Amino acid sequence: MEYRKIIEKLEEAALHPSKTVTNTIKSTGKSAIGCFPIYTPEEIIYAAGYVPVGMWGGTTTLQLADKYLQSFCCSIMRSNMEYGMKGAYNMLEAVILPTFCDTLKCICENWKVGVPNIPIIPIVYPQNRTLECGYVYMLDEFKRVKVEIERLSGKKIEEKDIEAAFDIYEEYRVTMREFVEIVADYPQIIKTKSRHLIIKAGQFLDKGEYTKDIKAIIDGLKVEEKQTFKGTKIIATGLMSEPVELLEIFDENQIAIVGDDLAQESRQWRTVTRDDEVDVWNKMTSRVADQRGDTFFYEYMKSRGENLIDMVKEKSADGIVVFMMKFCDPEEYDYPIYKKEVEAAGIPMLYLEIDQQITSYEQLRTRIQSFSEMLISREA
Ligand code: SF4
Image (tube, rainbow, N blue to C red):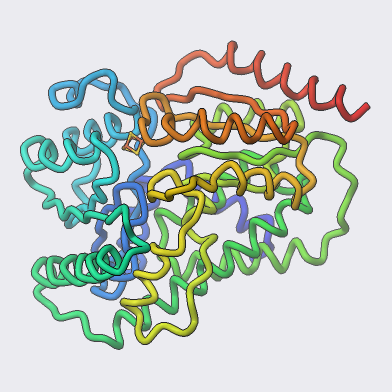
């Protein structure tokens, strides 16, 4: 298939998650397990013969979720709970939930009562992951999740299964690193909204098949001529850059994302796997231990600001846009620290508070437009 057609196909897949997951279940002949954000060990699910699918909320009318989650919980989890209670996730055999924040911890118990038909498997990540005790704990936790999935499927996950799954995910991660690099050179072809949708589609498709599509897009782009981009370039940081209507405003103002520090995007694959680990379990664990500049993993000296500044320099970006999920405590706690560092480096930064249930974009439109004009006037 011509690469532009693949782009259209992936955009469509990302815009209709429920339909896409149903189609993936049909085409692979596998059942699916839902993965609450973030860093669910998809390799274990894949090795057990399931398709792991992302659960990143969505735009919906909140009617039922308020029974369990207060209005000051983040919209992504309120949406997930709402979808669960309305039966939108009934195609899932189970869900896995990492308990990174207070909301996720509460959801773990709420889900059992609110969505009793879909079993939930929690996974607890250690914060002191670089200490030996944290490392050993993480390794044991991955193996506990493996046992829980085996119990669910009634089938043992052999070592060769997990190795094969890990290889598929490694290929995916390497390919995605290449994809975000090359896309930065072609902002006229892959615009901001499209970049996001192409990446998001991977959450609902079989990773092996999806990686082939991304490789075809990369090959297609490589033969295109690079053109001078007349707009502005930014680095995106935060949990996710949604709703997509927001990204349409970026495109209207010719703002391209040339690099990201988003939990839904590059944070998933930017840490390179150690090649000297003894087995897949240690590779998975060391990937957690090696993740830097990430809100969800403790660092004595937070390196997120430094990482963002480095990305701006490396990509010759004009500024940084913070996509702050409203009521996301971990992301909000980080903000004052990296804001100070980014300001000291003289890098313009735009803070956007986002919510998946936004109905009016006019204020955000004005702020994005003003930011874009400010960046252009700095260049002039
Ligand atoms: S508060 Fe933040 S980390 Fe916690 S579930 Fe919501 S978006 Fe995720």
